Image 1 (tube, helix red, strand yellow):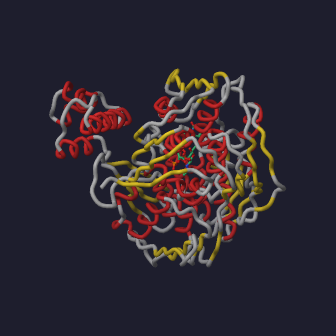
Image 2 (tube, rainbow, N blue to C red):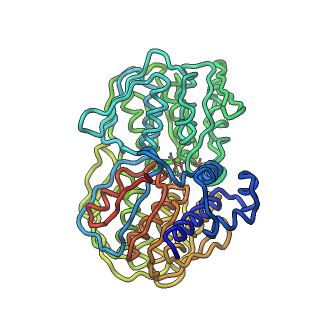
Image 3 (cartoon, rainbow, N blue to C red):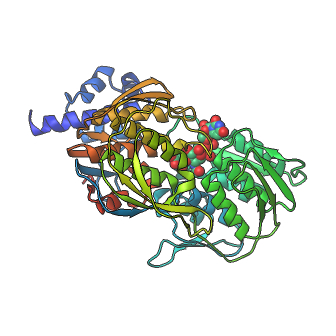
Length: 511
Ligand SMILES: CC(=O)N[C@H]1[C@@H](OP(=O)(O)OP(=O)(O)OC[C@H]2O[C@@H](n3ccc(=O)[nH]c3=O)[C@H](O)[C@@H]2O)O[C@H](CO)[C@@H](O)[C@@H]1O
Ligand SMILES: C=C(OP(=O)(O)O)C(=O)O
């Protein structure tokens, strides 16, 4: 095979992956390219010469750039796998608390300083959105502390629509904004491609505060009827994290007492509650499913807050240790939000040591340092499935695919929550995993696995993306993971920090 042939085959398989991620058939892609299905089949098999123009058109049809110029193109990772990790790593603060706190800063007329914030793409997008509507934000020099100063009047018409559409967080502007604006519009929420994620629970829960939302042409048109206010407890139909946060933020400036039932007691909700308390809002029941909020119609305080460490990053690092069969110390693990995960791992035979507990900078969350001890694992007898906190966290479930792949026997995962996420776990087959999709919600993983290096397009979802990356760390040889924006959405400098543990990961872009 000539060098050109090898490239055509590689590009062809990347195009096939991207098409499948997008859920298109060859015929559908062909029709958007105005070519034939057989031409698409030849392209995917690497049997068709491709012009740059054709590559650009394919990239456009699949929302995925295959070739780009300059430094602004997609970022890729080249991983030399098969090495053991060693040493210690600190868990960073969570993405999910960061986004809630950034939205909550809109409640405050004073200056909000968020300390030790995760410097991740998701935060960057929200900073772009906040900046576009007039909020002044700046990183304090040499720190990860962010200062936020609101304008006298927000300018929602100037909102950066492109940045807003890349996150789901914009939906959490509804709760804070309904106090100051009688009418406003926000772009539809975006984010990872995990299948349909309804926003209806948000609309229903905010209706008692007078909010009515009509969705038209890519925007939520919001109008606030000031004659309405909550007359009785707000009962959430699902125990969602961001819906609970939205109601908390609406209640924070509602002059009166709001009771929220079936609230999520999850980690990011707790961080938001601690922050709101700093703003002078009364909150009882933190960490339970009934929250009683005594709001303040005006909040104008200079406040500082540091969110807690990310249990999902902690779980990712545990999975990194398991898949590379390494002993590492993971510092600052928010133990309360990892207990069921760790109990499940113990059931699979995993051993680890934990330090005495200490307190997070948020003043509340209990942390430990956890040292992994490599050893043989066996598949769990029962399926592993997530539940709202205090169950096994849904965002941690994908990491059990990796751990199941290391264990002797068959592990079943049941992701009842998301329509798409389990499907992406089949990407592990490209690096040697034996993963069988039973239906869109259930996968069987057979272990142990002999990982092998491969070039793979990063699945368009954060956790499955990291799962593939970690498998590549274990696979001897050189792997490439292409277009890792979704990973950077939720993890700060992951490649660099894994390299500090002895991994070899190079970040690169196309020329
Ligand atoms: C920014 C943030 O904090 N994101 C988290 C948050 O998203 P978020 O709060 O936005 O989660 P969603 O509201 O999208 O809920 C996730 C999915 O679960 C379904 N659902 C949810 C709760 C429930 O009791 N029943 C139910 O069926 C929803 O319909 C949806 O399909 O919670 C998700 C589920 O924990 C996590 O994956 C996200 O990382
Ligand atoms: C699904 C996730 O988050 P988001 O709600 O930001 O899409 C996640 O963190 O895995």
